Every structure is written in C-alpha cells, then in structure tokens.
Image (cartoon, rainbow, N blue to C red):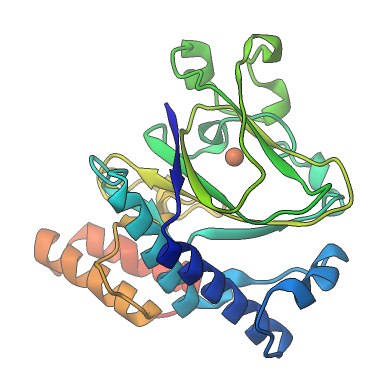
Length: 271
Ligand SMILES: [Fe+2]
C-alpha cells in the first residue's frame, strides 16, 4: 500500500525553483542554488514557507501534476493545502520530544486526528550525510486496534518488532505515497539537515463532514481542500476557485461555503 514515483525533469526542476525562490526571499539574497543556505539551516534557522502563499500554490501545482501523471489522484477528492515544507535538524527543537505527537515517535497520522481515509505523500528536498531520515513500515490498517486508536504516539497499540520496514532511499528524485496507517517516524542520527515536503490526500469529500474538527487549532480538517484547478499560480486564485466551486455546488448560503470562508479567515487572517 505504498508506492514510489520518479519525478519528471520538469517536476523536479519546478520544485527546486520554488524552494530556492522562498529561501532567497526569506534571506533577502539572490543565490542560484540552495547550497549557500545550508549552513544557516544546519544551525537551526527556521523558514516560514507557508507565509509564501503564492509559492505554496505553485508547489501544489507541481506536486499534483506529478501525482496525476502516476494515477495517484484517481479516487481522491481532497488535498491538504498548503503542503508542509519542513527543515529537520540533527537535534529536535527545544521541548519538542515532550509533545505526545512528536514525529520522532513511531506513529500513524490518524492517531493525532488526521482522517482515516487520508493518504500520505512525502519527498525529500535536500538530504546529506547524517541528516534526519524517514523511517517507514508497512501499513497496519488490517489491525483494528491500530485503526481505532486515537491519542499520544508513545502509548499507541503497536508492536514494533512485528512491523515490516520499507526501505526509503535517501534521495530527492521521487515522491513516496503511503497509506496513513503506515507507521513512520523521524529518525535523527547525525549532524546533517534535511528538507522535505509532505502533505496528505483525502479519498472522501473534504466537505462531507463539517464538525467541530473543521476549525480546531490542531489538525483542523478544514485544511483539506478540493484538488486544485490546473494552472492556479496565486493564493487569490486558489481561494476564488474553491469558493466558486462551493457556491456552484452547494449554493451561496451553504454551510460548506461558510465553513471555507471561516477557515480562511481564521488560518490565513483574510476576510
Ligand atoms: Fe506523520
């Protein structure tokens, strides 16, 4: 229930350009490669990728296209927007390991509240010797206790010795798609830094169940949007397409449309 998909040349290049653009904007530089940023990143500098909204829309476009080419959007209704670009350091952030859902602990995302019909997508963007790695195991969806569980990662009903590990190459040229009940964790083991992108697809309609989980602070289900229209390049465009679709499908007074507007107002501070 997992698959590896080689990036197309244009896909790989598109992603590199977007990441480079954000880094240059953040550091106020004009470098042609990510190399000059690495020392700063290794020292723990954080980059607020999500604030670069247009770039996140463009990144979503490239990623969705790669998935579509590989047939991975068939039977998929929703996508987490924006995607997460993460910089993982040799040492976790202060107090991070005290969190019950720190990704250093073996886990399945639904245990923390992701939908059970979600599908994880992951790609390394930068790797080097001694960088944190993704450790992944075969899905345990067949185990009812694992599927029913909701709670902290350290108390999860999981027998690690029974799991079957999947070898994830430490390379940046592929997308990895895996079932949300595939246990995984961040494995830190040296001094290197890693950059990666991850997000989730949702098999079912993201607007089918608008409940209190939609707007909660942690893992709000409103982060699942419809798949993007092809060619969107700005945040405004991404938003207006979504709102128009909802107005056409459910009506201008619908709770679906209101839920999306409320979500945008809360999480993007826009009216
Ligand atoms: Fe995870």
